[in-house]
Image 1 (tube, rainbow, N blue to C red):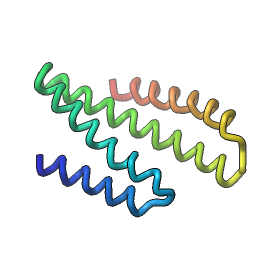
Image 2: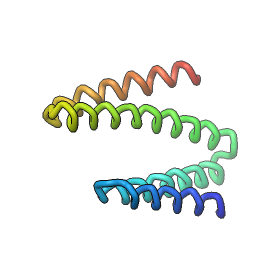
Image 3: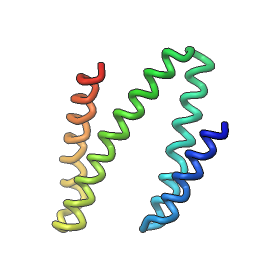
Amino acid sequence: MVIGGTVVSGFAILGDLLKPKCFAGLFGAAPSVALASLYLAVKRHGTTYASLEGRWMIVGAVAFFIYASVVSRLMIRRKWPALPVTGAALLLWLGIALGLYGLVN
């Protein structure tokens, strides 16, 4: 519980330091949901299942980080419209997530 609380607090501080402030909720909620999901997975299915779930959470986070980086760069630096950028980037996210799945699995 101490480790979980420390991680959530660290993300909350990170969210508070970044601009815009709407990121604060995102950074504060994501670790809480992940930790709660892993706790429930351990209780219901055991540690082996929970370790697989944790692995896929990491894969999804890496793919999302790349997605968010590409979207923010195209929309902020190049001033491209949101709908086509996010639509195309979702395909990028899917490709990265499936590629990482193939590598890890």
